Image (cartoon, rainbow, N blue to C red; front, side, top):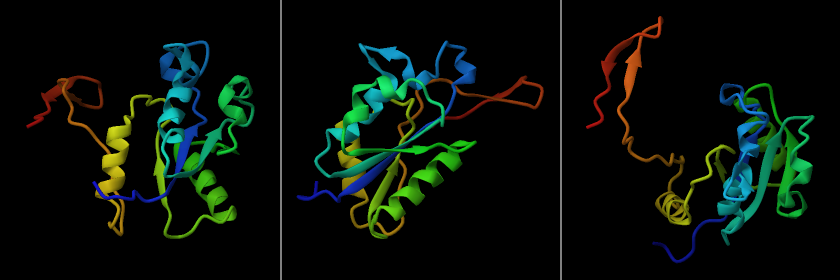
Amino acid sequence: MINSLPAFWAVIPAAGVGARMAADRPKQYLQLGGRTILEHSLGCFLDHPSLKGLVVSLAVDDPYWPNLASVNDPRIQRVDGGAERSGSVLNALLHLHAQGADDEDWVLVHDAARPNLSREDLDKLLDELADDPVGGLLAVPARDTLKRVDKHGRVVETVDRS
């Protein structure tokens, strides 16, 4: 690992309503181990010493965010989300640009409903991409069996994971 990981910004799109989840609230606000999924997702970034700041994109009328302890963290900036995830990310990027983020700064985009990002994986990503001019994607191998379906929802094949 390099001695000095690059400084970075984090963008957390969190404006989704989680319709497929069929819960009484968006999935990022469901409880997991005494905290919301969103708080877990924010935590890995907020605990990292190379974080410059974090922008969370929220639904305009989000009634849950004001109740989180994270709302008072000065490293977190809130912007309105877009109609789609891409609009939420764009709004956050435009906000970072307006706030003076450098063109050379790294921006990591992480979904609010993915709470299992480890510090080790985050450090490895930053380390691997420290001198990369383009960027990268953090992924893990699929362990589950994957099925491909046709337009009618019928299984047509098992996806080879090797």
